Length: 294
Image 1: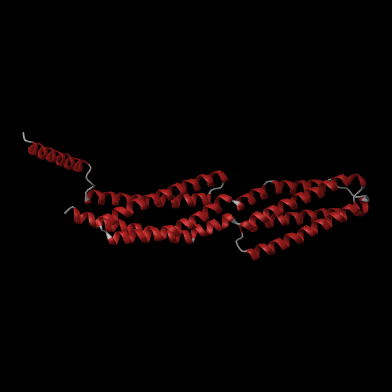
Image 2 (image 1 turned 30 degrees about the horizontal axis):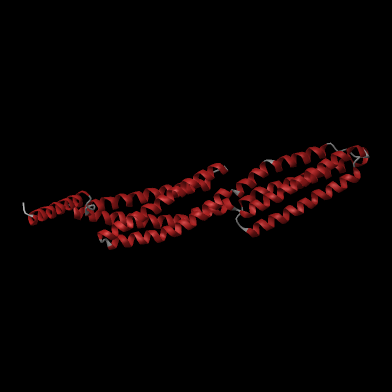
């Protein structure tokens, strides 16, 4: 075989090998890319639903642990949405689907708003300030109030004949004032309006002044042997008011109330808008597949 013939043969063999490699590693067909785009569009809707549902459960959870777990689940689903949307964009662009590309861009814009709002909702939900305030009200504050009541019950007057009924009235007044503060804690925790909270706090301050005034008068009427019990009652009242201040501070932050309001309001609207874009995208891709397989 001549040198020229050998060279030609080698060139043909090289071309054949390159062509074979090109066939093996050939890009996906238009139909395959369309099928993948439909799968991603469907997965986007599934993951968005998972994210919204997990976020809602984080808002409604009744423990810190559950709130954190659901918030983590919501964030994972949200990241999956972002990943699928990022993968879908180049496919639609490569197929030359301008309408579907526009729908995806519309979704991405709405989803960016959704994600920012949901991040805020989850941060509020896991803080659980209203839930913590409620637990404090029903737990330590209740115990301090009961200790105050029990301590006052053990106080006796110096002059039983003269001051017994007056002392009983003062004890009842002090206990009623403290119980009124307790009663106001629950509506304060549930309240969303700052002005309404301020009005409740003023009533609490009035009731505290009433309780301390009654204690001061009791101190002048109690026999010396009852002074330790009076000191215990005063300490219990101080402890209760300290806890009440913490309850008010947590309640003022209102993270559970605010997260619930956002979840039921703005988030529902944004979620629906995102779903509309995805359904429109899915329908558009379904029509493309029908045309491609005729």
